[in-house]
Image (tube, rainbow, N blue to C red; front, side, top):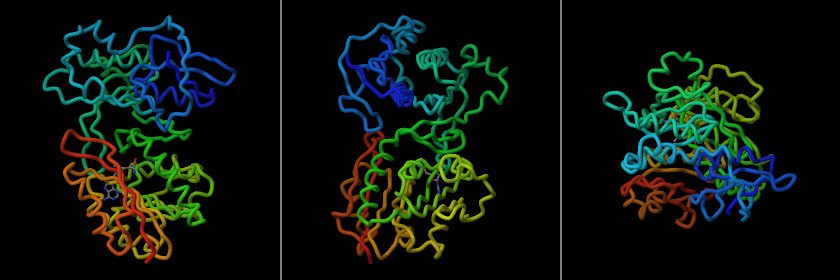
Length: 392
Ligand SMILES: C[S@@+](CC[C@H](N)C(=O)[O-])C[C@H]1O[C@@H](n2cnc3c(N)ncnc32)[C@H](O)[C@@H]1O
């Protein structure tokens, strides 16, 4: 049977990714095969090609049964509520959950009356198969310009799983939704009720780091990186884990709740206490932190011509903001824009022309590339794009 063999010192982190994606076969046991290797039994849903954020080797060995196997969450749910109800669940409700640290985010809609029994049963079944989940939150979609999810506590695990009216008795401190995500050996702190975060972008961050390592080697000096919509700083945290990859950094987000998390997530800031950020603050010799509207920040002439790399991650508005951000880039050496955008799928064929028209004198079509990262139904797509800007 297919197992993933992983080094013991990375095992916990990889098990979390595997479980978050429902890729572990719960019927069989994780066990050690060599002094420094453990194997994880894989479910049929595990992809044929190893995802980039997972290290290890696929091996075929005899599985060991798991005596404590309670079954998959589907089996537990069906036993309680019946197969018919399971077949009537829509995909978003059944498989759309996301695990962020010790929190599970369960897509939902506001129920007009009480939360139906089958929804509570669904949450319970998922928490039973994911014993490390402390808190489950119903997700009613993103709200406002900070793209923060509208979340409500659905269940907490104390000595047992509490839901519905039982939650009224739970002290509010215990319902705290701050959590820590382990991503590629990094720890990222955040509270999904206050800030934007998507674990699904981890592969994007790995690709970004890989390409920027090449770019650093090409221009032969540490990169000056400006992340104008940095959230809690996952892109920068990845870059900072590579010694000598970055020089100056500007980390900005309009959401004030992101700022304290930057001080916890960006390694050079960890020992510093957060002071009030009003405008742009030079926090260390190399790092500036700001809590500003990116367009206002981009109009500050002190920042013009300073940056080798610009992250533009405001998917609904990236293309509208882009023309106002160009003068932040250095003019004497090549520079890179790494961005993400959500756009109507039928506009994908003209995206390259559109990006080119924003920067006609500083790039050619061959300097522009993009990949579709996610499909929103048939009508919208999220793309990740790269633009290489030539010196002036
Ligand atoms: C899609 S999130 C990306 C966050 C982060 N780069 C990441 O990958 O996790 C967009 C971020 O832009 C911030 N934002 C929204 N409007 C902004 C603006 N006008 N200027 C600066 N930041 C803004 C939001 O608060 C949010 O954190």
